[in-house]
Length: 84
Image (cartoon, rainbow, N blue to C red; front, side):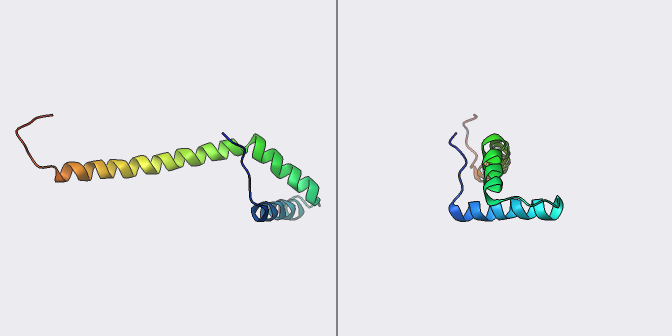
């Protein structure tokens, strides 16, 4: 799997959210560099867990939809003398 990367705009927004979290929830100031470093750490070390969970969720949705399609195909199947 390739590294999880964000566009510059996404990274700026996420870093801003990290800084706000530290300020509002932890009553601590964190600099731009430290917030970017923290984002990089989470992206490298923890991001794969979130990515994989997203894939699992997507698989579940896809499997559900495919099951519905499969059922719909059986519903329109025409009877024949051939048994499968």
